[in-house]
Length: 331
Length: 256
Ligand SMILES: Nc1ncnc2c1ncn2[C@@H]1O[C@H](COP(=O)(O)OP(=O)(O)OP(=O)(O)O)[C@@H](O)[C@H]1O
Ligand SMILES: [Mg+2]
Image 1: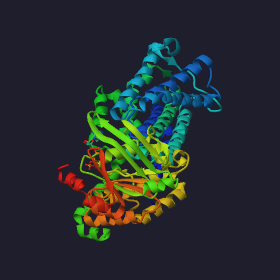
Image 2 (image 1 turned 45 degrees about the horizontal axis):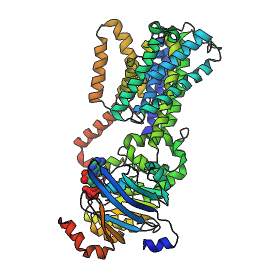
Image 3 (image 1 turned 90 degrees about the vertical axis):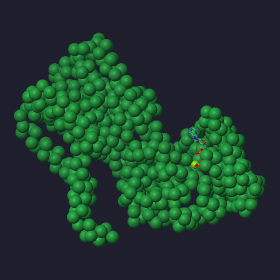
Image 4 (image 1 turned 120 degrees about the horizontal axis):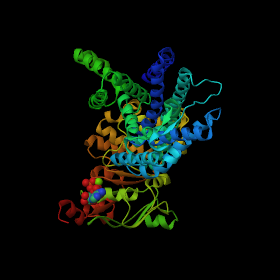
């Protein structure tokens, strides 16, 4: 069995285990897991850019925010999206995220490396500024309360049922994005990450490929935003603040860029540390900061890279012990 | 030869018309005029810094030209993007190996094959389901003697193997003209000979423009040599003429 297949089976096993364990936990854990999964979707959208295309975006909160505000405004003002039309709202949220990314991408995709980072950051701050200032629409500093969740045969006020809904969205997103990164288009993104100039010479319009990836990431950011509005119950400038973008980026780095599921690991750790530790000690932020720094310094491939490190270490060890035997195997 | 072909009504695959390029005050290319017909094998030689690579960068659209025209297959592509030029049937390799280091040999070749196909935009199907692309990749790898190493990450290949893979990537799109920028750079003399033999075996209809310092490779592969000096084409002729030329010797001895 190939290592790829083993990885997939492990991921499936872990996800199934989560689907069993979490609903049997306390409602605090269920809510925590639901939040983490919403952010995992956001983190995967960042990973498409960072891990698979080589673009570090610091503005992913913008698409998250537009999805969340869309959901909040539609449900509170127009009572739209609280019934079966919830699915339409999901679609509109993705569309809004994609459309905003399509607009921002015109500015951001020209730039590369640190300039891309700066431009996405600046654009994200524009959205934050709008959320803050345009109070007639967004409720300004107070934000918008989203007191009700949709109901369509399912009772989503039940935290466990709602968890399964978000879990379902997460699984479908993971599946779609997994197919995407394994597709010819996904391969082209990897090529751009590795060497963009060569890709151009091979006949790829790399700008277009990056742009499409950017728009797709925006769509999934929008999806996560709609789910967040119903998970959190309130949408405010806090939702679109720079910290949200940074968190999403760091979740990916923590879990492992270019793995998709690394985002879940990162999200689980960030939410775990934040929610649990913050009730225990006032200096929890330093713990989180320390974890980030240590990961970046000692585990550049993230926590998902640990198995590979162990395997490497194991091979190295058996080589040191038994150099002759290994040489005869390789020859 | 090229003028004769022209009267046959064939269009040159590549034509440069008084091409100029300045980097600030430095004139790297000065009024280069050149014509490559289908199946031509031409070399460009010249000392370090003569502007050979710059010329390739102008042809492939990496740099915009300062003045002059680049014609590919009879079309003025001077203002086209690199990928658009490639799609007409042009391919190039790089002096400094420019592969995808963390991808496997097979994935490198697949990227090159996919470059000219619309399927490169497909995102709802696994790459591995494109059997035809894989077969083509296997064929190319077999031809170059790489088949057994297809799953090796490119960064783990030797320098010589990477130089060879550069060419395989160039050939993957079935180009009509191939620009080779010092394919034998850094190779041992045995490897260079092998490289020359590989180039000589290529489809005779493929036009090749070769930049190379290794004269054995040039003499083996090319029927015509142009000498570039300070961005200017000084002399063009058969290998015999170039070998005998007083001026060329002066340039290479550093007098010219
Ligand atoms: N992007 C650039 N910006 C400024 N100057 C450049 C640039 N690219 C090339 N040059 C200059 O143009 C001149 C020609 O460079 P080029 O790389 O084309 O030489 P070359 O003939 O390929 O040399 P070599 O045999 O060493 O590869 C050099 O003086 C070089 O410094
Ligand atoms: Mg050069």
